[in-house]
Image (cartoon, rainbow, N blue to C red; front, side):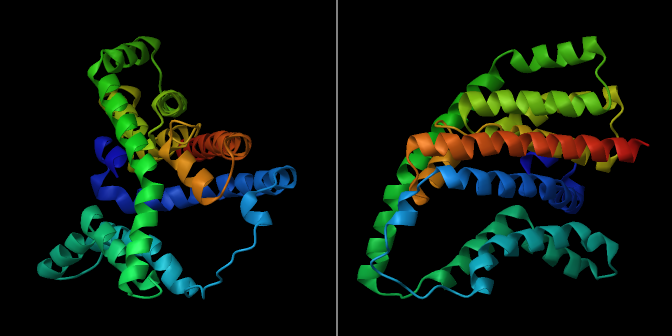
Length: 281
């Protein structure tokens, strides 16, 4: 959302989501193929230890509701201007579909996943959540702080000057955006910081390189997003989310998640470049 906003796509979030879905398809196939291959060489602790307490899982609908509800609300709010609704109705839908409100509603939807509202159970659940999330929150905060330091340095102006002097245009700006985001992601770990900083760097160059179409700029968002996931390693909070909840050792996480995020990032860049060329032609 921040990346799209920095590049002037606040009114085209629905388009960004749709292109994101399209670009994610090749990346998903890459992940499935790689996961099936690497799974043969990794013995995960979660696969060899039998769960002592088997609980009834929630329905598939309730499981995906906290994830898809915010996405649907945000996308619908983006397309509301295309429909003939009253002004009050449009304002209400745009309010509910604003990112903050939509995510809060998604959070409330996750309450349906709690199996029982027992005091001792909830206290134990909260304790486990704090234990697992503590390291993640500290790493996220540290990554954001490092990203803010990078943004305060002359690096942004140096990149702008280099792009302008090199007369980078069209599809090559997607590659530049990917590389900058990948460098920031790998260096400081935060995908959010990589997205925000890279989009802030490139936003003043859109007119210079001739990117004025919402579709083309949305594909630049895709390229930056691909770079912002390349690569996930120990300074990335998501790396620890996967390794801790998936019971991976550090070595196994590097062999699986780190390499997979690199391949997925390249797949996203390639998909965005191909779509950009098709749009231009």
